[in-house]
Every structure is written in C-alpha cells, then in structure tokens.
Image 1 (tube, rainbow, N blue to C red):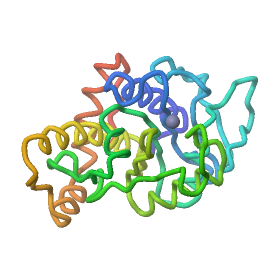
Image 2: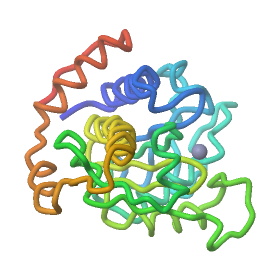
Image 3: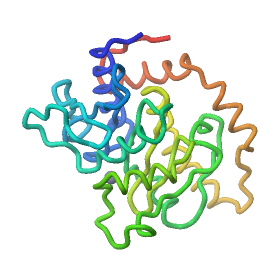
Image 4: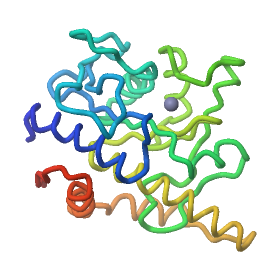
Length: 241
Ligand SMILES: [Zn+2]
C-alpha cells in the first residue's frame, strides 16, 4: 500500500506528466480520492499543472469545500471531481482536460470510438455531455455541484466523457491508469480524425475487443509508460505492483 505522502507525490507527478504529454496546458486538473477518507479528495490549488508542487495539494469535501485552504485559491471547476467521486465509489482518480484533439468530437456529433488496442480503456463509445441542455447559456465552466452531478450522470459507468465546446473528463480506479486513459483518449482522437479523413468505412475495435483489451491492461503495462513519462517530466519514478 502506498502512503498518503507517496500518493501526493504521485499526484504532483501526474500533473507534470499530463502537461509534458500535451493533455493539459495552463488549464485542466487531476485529483485523487483521499486514501484514508472516501468522502474527501486531493487536488492542487488553482495553478498550471506543469507548476504544481507538493504544497499546492489541497483537501476537499466531496461538495468542494476546502478542508484547510491556508489562503490557497481552489480551481473553479473542482465540482467535476467531487461529483464523480460521489456518484462512483469505484473511482479513485479524476482528470479534467481541454486537449485539442477531443474538442471536434464534442461538437460535430461524430462518435468517438477506439481505433487501436492501446486506446481501448477509453470505452467502446465515448458519451458527450452538453451543458446547454440543462443549464442553457453559461460560461461553459462546471462551477456547481448541480453541473458536476449532471456531467457525472453522462459519464455513467464509463471511464470517459466529452464535454461539448469545452473538453473531457476521465476517471479510473487508480491514478496512473487514469493518466494512461487520458493520454490515449487524445491519441485516439487524432488517429480517428486521420482515419475518417481517409475513409468513410473505418473499422473500430468491436465491443468485445474493447472489453478484452481493457480487462488485460495490467499495472505492469501502465507502469512501463509511467516510468517513461516520469523521466520525460523530470520526476522520480516510484515502482508499484
Ligand atoms: Zn475546463
């Protein structure tokens, strides 16, 4: 079992990796559920992920109230995280990002589906949350639990959801696996766009193939990527089984 301090270091590393992999820029965030209290989560203060340090990590209630802010300003969109943890007891980590490849799929009605084996963990079909349906004209930010819960409903039992005109949310049972899915969600978007520009008859992974690959994606596989991404992000690698 990892200690709280080790998990916080991993969370800092996840911020840096998502930045170096182009999944977040100056915006976007990643959280973990508190390992000792399922009704709390850990998320950086409002800061560009590439700059996040250990002292930036704050603790929140699922409703998004800081437990001890110490003067630190939280992200406006932290409700995405709390609502996902509230609805899904299996979710231990959550990422919100605006990576460029996913945006066209949120606005064109073109369904995103896995095109290669590495991308199977995104799920067989990626749903799209349209904030306008329930909340009308907004600034498109998820600034309340009501909005977060509506998004979590679209996410359902899956690991990914797109957000129209905004970005995506990715969840998982483990932080490193969630980062892995976010990286391959962006790659899938790029590959699918290339493939669909070449042919109208793209053959996606079947539902059965998607499930089989996702079920056999081991922690060893994910750690192989994680170690490489740690080196690129200039962060120490901690091996876990
Ligand atoms: Zn956002």
